[in-house]
Length: 578
Image (cartoon, rainbow, N blue to C red; front, side, top):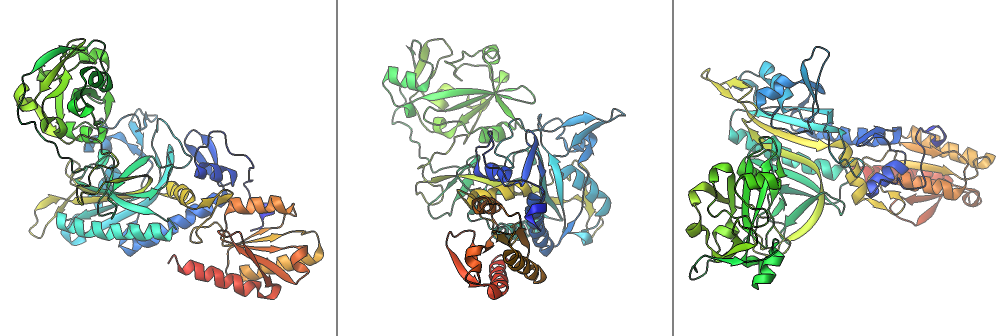
């Protein structure tokens, strides 16, 4: 490919709205162009990278007996009604009606669609296990798209779904898929990816893992032990907290706390530590409107994912003051003492249930109770005690006891053991050896393709542009001709270009004849692993300059050796990603 003919210009300045390096370089390097918030077009350079990512994914899915299919982006709402998700998923699911007023959706995930397909094609235990996968466009009506391809509305995803006769078979295949994911991310050239325990969320299922590319711009928070025996997303991470009840439960007493609403204000006024207080945080089920009361010790924060799971709420939102008052509570001074449990769902964190003599609200403006003890002062039958606390860096690891470390990461893949969440309600059954019908046991496995491309840049770049691993680089070698208008330069550069192409090397040829600094700047933005430079200075020595993108130093090599040296370098580098 000659750069003079390549569609997609390089841009000198960073986009104004770009905050991450991948967003900056993908736009500046001519890989993508924004169409609308969270919606991008791929230019030829970006498409070449994406095609290589998809090829690696296909190879690894095929190795574990995956069969590729392609399901529609536009789906009838009735499929999602069958599974029960149509009413439980929020505004991120784009709903619309066709010209016949039939309710439709744009698929953000394809569990319902694949179950619809499987129940017509898989009927007997003899056909199981089976795995179907696709690489398809998805649409999620994201409220706040950001960071270029990391959080978008329209995206390409590899999603795979496996079908099994029993849980043991699912677990066996789940482990195979986990290994395949490890290989995929290694072959994509990601430098630091962790597999961690995760929250299943709207996908459902009892077990799930996320693959996190560690980088500072990541939206997810990961906790892990120093030896990495324990790894978990903040949404599900727990710690070996030890709570102690006091030797004696002191009498409950109401005290005046004028204008003290926050934990800091109350603790300061009463001269106690935050861990000696308890706080109530009110949420609502965003779908049903049900009020949810969370009680947690004052030095902890509520983990909304844990709370949503405990309350069986698909989505949470903070409750407004009017809803809190209607339930008989006073905002800022709320308590679960003497309240009507029928008006809310009450969730109590272990930090409160296993402590004692705490300061809590009194459901009266400017008043709190001291010496609150959960088992003595509440109707324990009306509340659920569980872990709803957010882990903090330095908390003791639940496995090793060592202080937990914290990192940021981008979720580049996820796998779920779905069980019968979709197969049972949608009638996706198989006949066993005795002719008896059972719902299939399912697994689900996803990789964000565009997000993977952006994540590679986040982990592999310098101040000048991406440093592409050769496995997904848009081209393997770039030939730069300085002074291309000179016959001897043109002849030498053309020969190198043609010889490398004949040898099967993917070559980008900068034949534009621009100033050297301009050409080198573009070369850095293109991030191609190897660069051959032909210039008047090198020609004077009958040489070319050869260098790696990840190294600022270059070496001089004889013109007649360029082809062999470049081919050998490409083959050696490619072998690292097989």
